Length: 193
Image 1 (tube, rainbow, N blue to C red):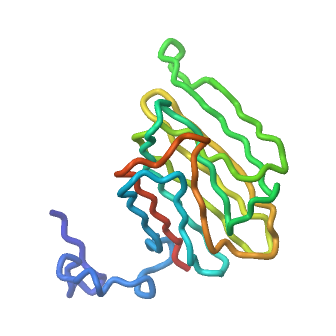
Image 2 (image 1 turned 30 degrees about the horizontal axis):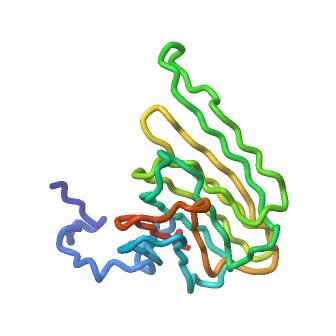
């Protein structure tokens, strides 16, 4: 195991107990886990609530195991229980073409403006995707999502048009008839200030 020292070379990092490492003691650029949901029984929607009502950058990590028969699908995201038509997004599905040694566009999904949720990146049911969410109270909230498996890469971008509120809750759900299976996990991290 590698050993790292503070600049005064007096303390080895392996001697620091985990509870002593707090966001206040770390420099800018670290991710602090602020929410985690472990799915133990089949559910149609996962809600993450009580997020801090402040300007922030979030990373949403989604390991969604689907109970349906599809090998992949789009998961949908809503903020602050807003079911109005205040969202829009575009998703790209790319595949690696070994004959050309390059990625090519397989599909592009341009969802019309004024929809009732953001379509998260298309992901295989037993793989992980992550999304970066920029939450500034005076601006539209933006989200960039990345996922895929094997030779497929997905990239989705979207926005929530609210320019007055910070994000305090995130709801994630699948298309009708698809559910989160036991073993699914959702984690939210906040970028330290």
